[in-house]
Length: 359
Image 1: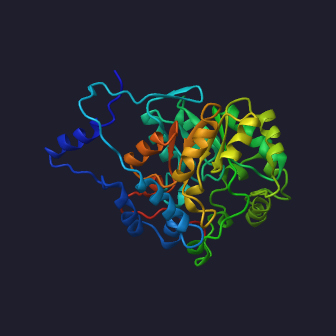
Image 2 (image 1 turned 90 degrees about the horizontal axis):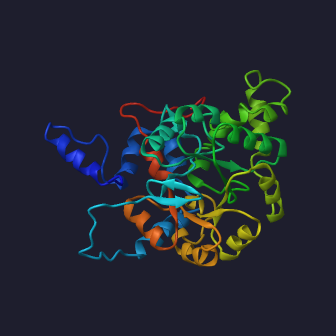
Image 3 (image 1 turned 90 degrees about the vertical axis):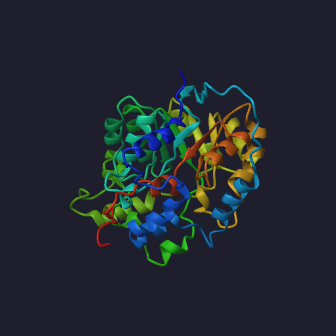
């Protein structure tokens, strides 16, 4: 029998008979208000902030809101099966947890908490390169559960090669390469507080634990953390990468490769021509390019261009189940839920998560 995801609401009602009510809002859009009270100003800005004046984040919501659902009636829905085949894997629902970095700024259990939640529901967890927890620890937390690895493509080839080797050795099965961050976007909320967690060594766990990265340091990380941070900053982004460079990834990763950040049909076609397995239609939740097209507006064109050649995934602007439904109707095979939705849901009552040294 297929898993009935909607049964969760009846569990809530039954618990209510004993006087128990949900600890967190069931209207997920209210999590932002809750996060404002639980977190410091720096983490709140980092989570909620966008590039420029926020126009791209607003465009994401507007693009989804423009599409309305037309219910159809008198269908037999006693047995509801949401399973889907994605990149050769059978998933219990067309969902995965999107890669989100530096989770320790919003919850003391950081990426481990999100990984456990994904594993409990059987949906893939995508670990960010910029995590607060090394990939080996996440693999231990998840056991045999499905996990994918998101790569920020470093300038240093040896570090990139090492990341790929470590990820495969620890059971990460799909590589998700974020292409829309060759350099940081202009994010006023972070700039106004001069808040960038990486400069405090937060979100650098995969780098600081990597043998190829450490080989480039004159001293061990614990002896000169500032030098380690500067080494990280110097290699994190590479605006010189071009399409032919994908051959390096194909050579060093023997599983599916998905390119994240695709918004234009011709770029999706180039991904297919380069031997990639999928694309994520995404604008980084509006955090990179101010004035960008809403991701849901870009989705139908990309799906039409390469839907028969690549697995088309989607993120950006997703908050609730109806957003997921719309993305599927617009051509996505599955939806990555992350960014603001996951971060805001990771609050622990009565505690503020670590903001980084000196904060």
